[in-house]
Image 1: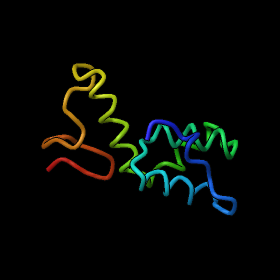
Image 2 (image 1 turned 90 degrees about the horizontal axis):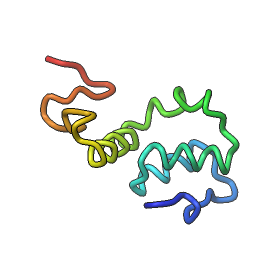
Image 3 (image 1 turned 60 degrees about the vertical axis):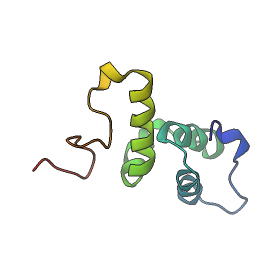
Image 4 (image 1 turned 90 degrees about the vertical axis):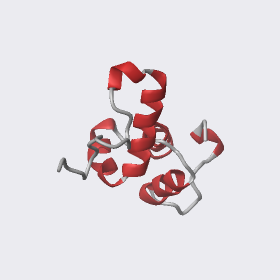
Length: 90
């Protein structure tokens, strides 16, 4: 999925339902953020808390960043030894 403009919200869809649908369709977090800002006028100040439960979308975004700049991020998201949200070092 390269753009949210080809995937508008359904008429009765809430912002959470829309975001979940995009996540299930493979969208990464930044794309979903843009979609929510455009279609639901969601301010940036609300997005941090909103996205706490969207780990798959967040990991996709980190993976995209890693592919663009592998030396800037270090360990690839999801790789052994990588600590992500909701995980801890053992």
